[in-house]
Amino acid sequence: MRHQIFIIAFLQGALVESLKEVPGYLGANVTLWSGADPSWKLSKIEWSVFSNNTWIATYRKGRTNIERISRYKGRLSLNISSGDLTIHNLTREDAMEYTVDLINTMKNGTVNKIKLKVMQRLKKPSVKKLVTASVEGGCFVVFDCSSQDQDVDLSWEVGPLTKTAYNMSNPDGKPGVLLAFLSTTQKPVHFTCTSSRTTERASNAVTAECDGKVKENMIA
Image (cartoon, rainbow, N blue to C red; front, side, top):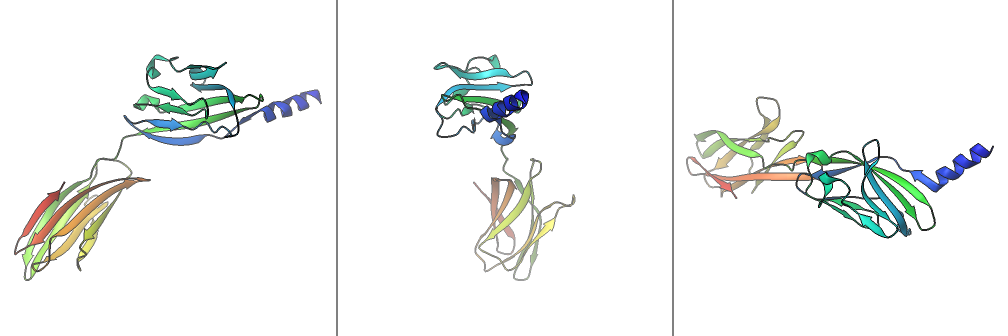
């Protein structure tokens, strides 16, 4: 019975939270949230990596140490009020699991784990004209949009709206081809291709008009 009581007391004193995933971008900064209760006054903060819990940033007895590991030197900031850790100038090697051990002045503790995913920011998609054809009253034009990035969705926006604009698929079966009809009486039309992945977006646009043949301009 004594063993059971000890285990229950230990679990109440140091709760282990589930793993959370945080995205970051190469060369940018990212903040890993400690998950500390806002009402806590922290007396100890220990951020660690690897299975052997190598400390990379600590706050103990009123002293902060963020220069523990050479690969992180000059790239860490530790908020001793919240326990949050900021990593500056992210590299691909920073993508790993981080553990933070927190203890407050009342001797309550918690352990949180964060998995950092480091990604390259989306590049602007490439837009090129594939086909043009002059017909009575206007021109047909086909644009192709492609991206060097993986796992992205491509979409088109046309403005002002034209009555004839169709999304199609390129030869590899992925969306990105747009067929449009431009009237000779129509003002220049903006064609914008957007590459998106989760909450990130990157766009590229061209304008085109028809006066018997297609005139095309890139939009900066």
